[in-house]
Length: 109
Image (cartoon, rainbow, N blue to C red):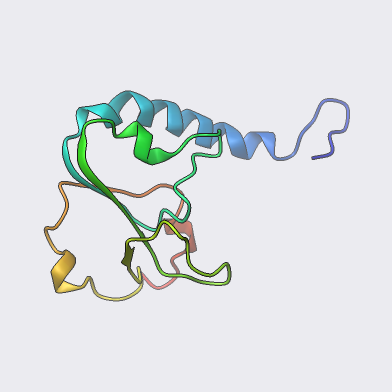
């Protein structure tokens, strides 16, 4: 990234993710049971880690995705279209539903 006199245009956008990652690191170990990361793509926290590792006390950790222009994530466990009705099989299937930086890509809510 090119910076001009110390200004890095992407820096202000990364600050929000770093902040939310820090909060999540603190609270995620409190959750037990089955965790579902909704549309987690590659599950990366953009700081060199993975969200799955934040949930250290989870019984299970699954990732949903719907594909898209980047294709399908190799980590995807469940296919989920966020603009469609929730499949009956998923209703009540997780103790924790985690979503981070995905909803801004959903246009038909």
